[in-house]
Image (tube, rainbow, N blue to C red; front, top):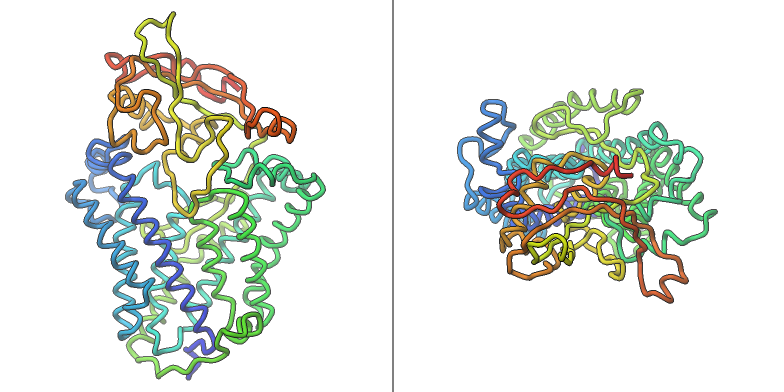
Length: 488
């Protein structure tokens, strides 16, 4: 062993490598299921149009010279297979260059997808997965100790992720500072889960305790990740327990699961052995190849140089949230829920089979994850990412949706089979409706008595019309009467 080797972090390495690879499998499968409808050749935001418009300014992507749905499926399919092999631990059985090559392949493949994904891939956890995948490339094979350089970098990644989120909250909303944010969060978060209703109805004193615990986990514990063991391990446990609480209380794609995986970088084998006696307290390794040590040191220097902008951002008054400072999504700035929405609004898409407005009976399209039918219990989808449902949440907050929402209405009028498969149900099945419209509702969680007597999880009230009734002949660019924020 040498100063280069992180002896006693074999469990950490295995969780990092296999855990990050699992999320890549989920991400590639999500892409195969959704990309063509959202961004394909006939998608809501067609990637070929974006690539032509960007020209020489297009970000790094394998699709720079040619995009096709078939090529997209090939890249995502290969990525799935390679990531699955890493989950199974096969590349790690070979020399160091084998797992390194495998991770760099899935990183490059997913980078290529994200960089043409536009609005539908503009989420902080995309950059988080890319950064984690690149760093995992240099954790080495099973027969050698993981390098300290990368173990420390993963802790630095968790620090930026957690401390950045903590600072953006303290700067962004008084509700976080006076500990009242959780009065609203469980009800107004993007996609509530099956337990969110119950979390929302916890006593207010408990919500204040939740907020205080969140501040400790994000503003204090991250500094302790760099302390000696077992303090670092305890800090990692705080992060993990906090993220498990978030997993239980909502649907945030793979953000929380990936954060749990990354936090294992601060848990040593002896500390893990104290908690789980079956875990090995020590694993012997062979000598690390010189060439690999040189490569990892070079990568460490690169990542250190790229760390300066996000480090400054953490302490900047105008702190950026979920920002990349380079085209390769390495060493990014993170953060979530800098402000908390106090009320929930939902855009409900409706259709009628009558061409006569006076006699029209409007029926709803049901999305898979976002609230719709008040009687429907919210489902658990994370770590899977329902991209269309998430953008519907942003649309209700007043985000501009011309580039994708109007094409969505067009596809619904056409009863496009691929688009309908993105939804939970369509009011007329595979038949074309005569007209569609978009209506805004105010939603709140039901009370205990309303749930008991009316069997509803949500209570809603119609606010107004976002897009008036539109028929297929006039649906190329339906004009909204107002945006959701104006209706509110």
